[in-house]
Length: 294
Image (cartoon, rainbow, N blue to C red; front, side):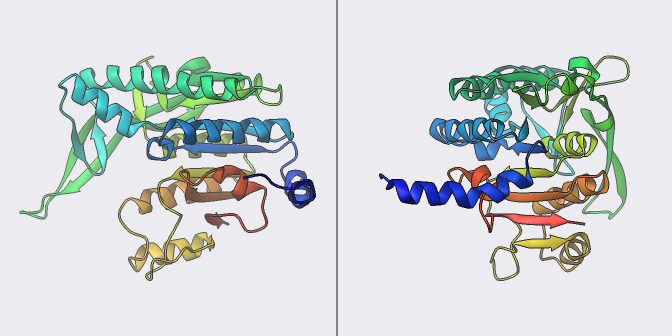
């Protein structure tokens, strides 16, 4: 579909105040495994990221890869177990997790951004001690006895320390860091970290202007399944308490609160499968997701 030059000019002018708002600011974009979709969707996402960088915004991409990890584990005949909503990552699984996240997915995204005219640099949390994690502990309630018990999730970690040295050498130099959520332990081992949590820790350490959590749903929905455009932290806690926010949306909203507590100005949950979702959220008047703010 062709657009006449006058319409094109109007669209660009309308984007100007948004470009000024984010000028030289850092925007962390968590690109979920479920949001990646088809190749064209990934290439559209890459173009969005390059356009942000070209307009003097500093994007940092953090990607997931749960579906891709599951596919590879199935191919190799390695069965996965889950507890408290997290994959139990044993020694065999962590090797595959690192291979898929820090290897194939990371370099695929880097390749798409570079093909779109950017200069992407693929890293994981182990590079330059970017993210040091500690072992996650979780409790689950036995449905029969109602007794809480500790679950060993293996090589699953949560961010403990963030060292920005390597990112400070990249951000603002016409390069786009693309980060896989694989972290180091205090002894140099490897931890699998939830990508949302990893992105929240990175965004908080960078004091990002925005953290975008791209997923496969429009955002936070009310009880009638309509999008809630904006939430305060207090609003979000109330909606969790009354059950409006439930299931997999709870940890995403908790990540929003976690990032806001660490200095991020605003966090948006949005549908990454919408074409050019990042541009629609950042460079238009209304955005397309749910903004959570302090």
